Amino acid sequence: MRPTSIASASSGLIPPGLRRRAAALDLSVYRAVTRVRSPRTTPAIRLYSRLGEHGLLWFAVGAAGMAADRRNRARWRRATVSVLTAQLTSSAIKLAIGRPRPVIDSLPHLISTPTGLSFPSSHASGSFAAARAYSPLLGAGPLYAAATSMALSRIHLGVHYPSDVAAGAALGTVVGSFGR
Image (cartoon, rainbow, N blue to C red; front, side):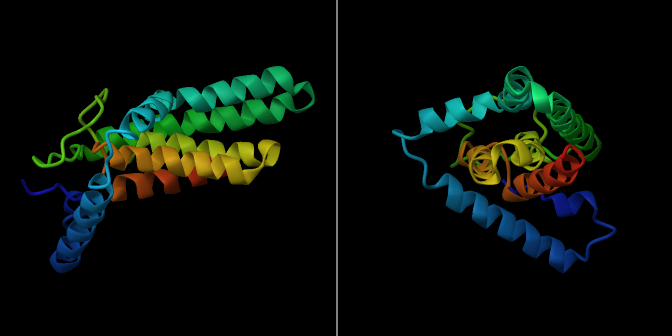
């Protein structure tokens, strides 16, 4: 099956040759990541990815921060609202673009998803918004490691192309900047 490239959604804006190369690169990276699947690690990756569904993990971090850090409660609230904003914005863009999730016969999805839409990755959007917004309160290193792991889990599980994740990470970083 031929993958649906994000470049095809904007066919009038991107030259055909560049669109083909972008789609080929997207598919190549997707195949490389999904080929390293292991029956030993996939259950843990699936569990971690489920924690990111609708930003659940990141809202829990924000709620815990608001409860435990009274002095910075307003900062935690603003940061958590930015995560919510990233999630909602990502969902709206996903509906507007309408890019379907990858469907490649030899690489099945390893997790169910609430929708069949792929671009941008809301897991990546929420995770990178949280990393950006929460980092002044918790430190950047572990947050960005967690966000990157969450985003890559979606490719590993076969439900996002790398361009979905990259766009989600960029969106989350921008929106998360407003929560700092």
